[in-house]
Image (cartoon, rainbow, N blue to C red):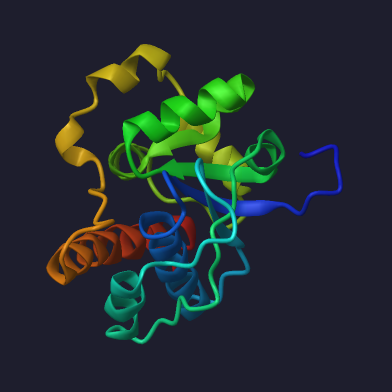
Length: 189
């Protein structure tokens, strides 16, 4: 439980600039959780900038699936934000490393997206009466910090920034599948 007045965050997505991957993932997960009637909050942050809108290509790729990101502005990650999150999901293993350098005690709640889903498939979905942080503790059980270096780079969610529209679409489709599965695990029917 946080000891400050910062609002509790159910799931916090993290990427480099908080302009493409993490806001796309947050919007997709929020939509999936809303469909399931889940009250969990979903936010996103990054390491670089503040107040920057998503690039046009990110907006267009999300408009194509009925999601409007035009109101999003990048937000910097802080130890306070990290501490408020029940689950922290990095788009790459480097993001998880940077989160744990910024807030070392929060290591147990920070995962790459692929590793989170793999562990959840083994541990099982969150139980109806189980707090998100309790489920995350089960996911973290037996995990070593050194395991981060063994995670395949091929599992990182690729950054489409500066790429072609099809790069943004490919990232969106990857995140559609991942967020759909995460919503099922976080809020089982």
